Image (cartoon, rainbow, N blue to C red; front, side):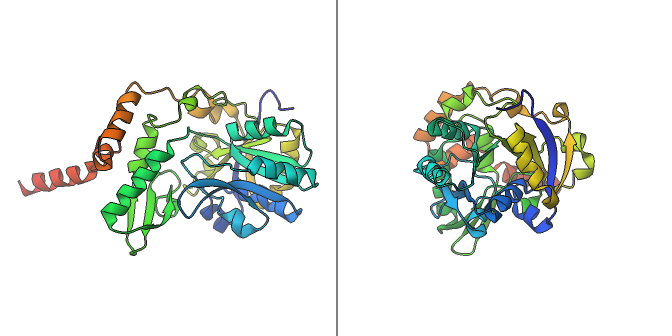
Length: 314
């Protein structure tokens, strides 16, 4: 049974290496390390070789490490729920991580509580269309005359935790840093229709523990604000608190105030943009470059640079 109000913490992993490899502060690694050490199983989202988000099962750190980092597309669950049930029925400890709707779906599928199931839900901005993601990748491959080798949705190593720049590396050794997909994503017009009515856009979540980027850390715990990533952790029930206590030797933590930790997904869903229908008409009618110029800010930087050069010449 979840509490009426969660306990709130700012968290950083004590290992700088782990924190650097994580999207925010490394709380997921700390929790999953504990489950793996106890002989348990981890279920989480990775980016496949085809750059699809898919849920997989992990019994080792190498596979688990692929679950780190953000994937700003909806993951394919496949047989994940069935496999979670098999592991639980076999007496295995299981950590399942996913969006709040995925956690709620898993609990509905299982139909009863399992004492060895730890659910960690990730605060979700909303889920963009995989069709737009695939079109974006195809456009980048055409522009760079090469297949994509790897993708980093948010390049924290180069740009810091606060910025949001996607880096694509290509087979021909080229790489590009872009804000096109994130700009389209933050326009909210390509989110799933259900995201505009999401029941989990509040401080109440179905997971035992809820994790997110700690936006607002400069107010809640300014001594943690070093632009290397801080996890916002909501402890939602006694079981989640027990599991959190088990990992405190691996993390730096500070209890913070809920009112200093509020962000839009804790208040209400992002509203459906008035231009959503037009955005989709343009997506299906135009080539992606035109779409990227209109909705992804593509070319704006070059226009500004050209204008500056023109002014300087005068």
